[in-house]
Amino acid sequence: MVLKNEPLSKHSSFKIGGNADFFIEIPNEKALVICLENIAAERYMVLGSGSNVLFSDKGYKGVIIKLTREFRNVEVFQEKILVGAGAEVQHVLNIALKNSLVGLECVAGIPGTVGAAVYGNVGTKSEWIGALVENVEIYKNTKKERLNREQINFSYRKSSLEKCVIVRVEFLLKKDTKNDSLSKIYDSIHKRLQRQPLDMPSAGSIFKNPVGYSAGKLIEEVGLKGLHVGGAKISNKHGNFIVNTGQATSKDVLTLIDIVKEKINFKFNIALETEVKIINGK
Ligand SMILES: Cc1cc2nc3c(=O)[nH]c(=O)nc-3n(C[C@H](O)[C@H](O)[C@H](O)COP(=O)(O)OP(=O)(O)OC[C@H]3O[C@@H](n4cnc5c(N)ncnc54)[C@H](O)[C@@H]3O)c2cc1C
Image: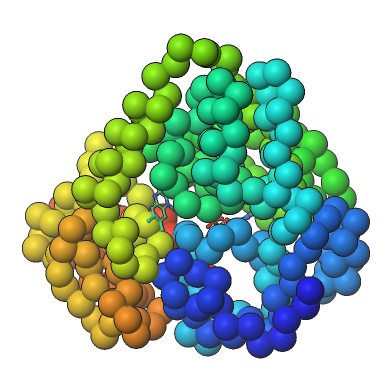
């Protein structure tokens, strides 16, 4: 399905963003290849669930691709799970648990798709999804490649899978019938409910944690919790969350980001790096 002038606020957990020139839903690999061939000269990006992006108020000049249907398939082969990049991470975690496969607990409660999770190596402060990846199938332009785990670098909220479309991921988990996965998952979700402003639109943590520090605590220490610019506000509940109180624009959010960076740099001499992907507009 091809949509013209599609409002990106509908496709971002922040509920912010102008219109994309084109928004294409791709149901399978054949359609993906045709699409990639046709948009080779255009600017494009793959979008998962939009829970880690800040779109511009000016929208997106180019093509947004969303992987649907066959890209949401999940298959279990003993200790391995083969997953389409468009599947939701929480769905995969549920299937793993039903099959007594453990390892993915570090992603409990994290919104978004498998493709984005592997691209951004999501997880907690100490555990990442990248550690469970066995291999990844990608498209670089129209060329398909399969990369083994040795060929991919994973570090804190980063992978070497740049400038490609991830289409499928194989995870290697562990069979464990008397596991304590469920209690780990409940614990993680309980902490999220207590600490994060999940009742308001946001994109999760705005900044990466600098080595040895918590970005949220630093922001709290400089007294910026509760600060707002237009409709964007630094959450009173968690210093590293910026929430949309209703009518926030990306300009509001970017202004808050600049204020935080400047204050933290001035007070602690630390250069904060954004975790949210800031997508340039038209
Ligand atoms: C309330 C909340 C809590 C969160 N908690 C956490 C947390 O605890 N830990 C954590 O790590 N993150 C967390 N996040 C951030 C977010 O959930 C993750 O970054 C997630 O992986 C984003 O998935 P998505 O599908 O929404 O990606 P999107 O936001 O749609 O895209 C993110 C990036 O991935 C790229 N991408 C998407 N799909 C593909 C693909 N198939 N191939 C190549 N590139 C692709 C996009 O181009 C974009 O650059 C949180 C977010 C929210 C809103």
